[in-house]
Image (cartoon, rainbow, N blue to C red; front, side, top):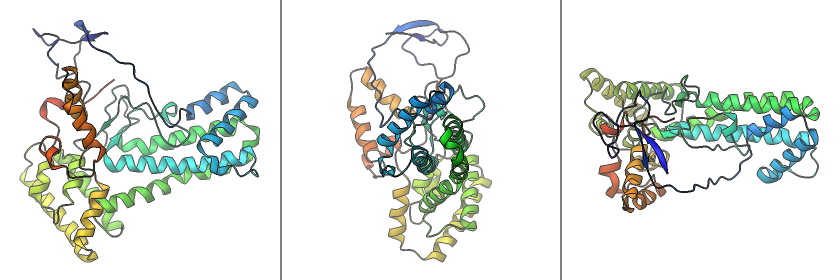
Length: 363
């Protein structure tokens, strides 16, 4: 296929432009292509419910809702529930599934990029993973999708984006089926319950990532302080939490996650933070090996960073498929140590990738 390409001044189509261009494409280049078949556990979306609400065809809408229930929530069909009752139960479970999904995203630095209602599946998952990325340097407003200029779906705002989709679905259900009106308050209670479900799952993952036995106000303050240090140091999100599983962790080990040297003040702040973590750990008196394994089970060592994927498919384009096969093996066991891959893949993003179009950001 032919696609547009941007040339650096005096460059050729074989050169890669590291920065986002501010001009029209320079030329067309010929590239091999493939037919992509997108597979998903379901293609039934919140957006479909919005569409039926706009159409106003009640009979068709009921057929659709029964189909969703039979396909994605068959355990809720006991023969005694009316359609509105079954849909209300389905919605409550959908809320819990969304809370669990987003809590897991936040725990590993995953950014969906475009989590609108059309990409939100009624089975509680999401799709359309085009502009996604795993955050590398910690930045709460990180958003790789350039079309979201306002950061509506940025990393730190993903729980709020999920809440918006829940409200959209609740509104569409309440307004499009007369039998749902009397269950509107039930739907609203389920929506409001999202935050408690999310917090319960998210804080438990954070507890394990820090190797603590319980989560309280002191742990929460410690975690918020850690995020501040990570942002100021531009520390790699995945690496920091994995390196904390060293027993005991040290500033020297954590510094591997920094893209460069930090100031003396930041170094002292990190050392102070580590002492605070150590105090909590000593007070809990947990078995060090049990604690270490729990931390590693909550913090993957490897995630599919865009620059890693780029290297693999660039090699495949040259007919070299070993990196693709290696990547498949690596990411099939992301929590394992896999020392053969550590030097190349367990490190902050290389400088050439940090502002590269299609890697650091995408449309």
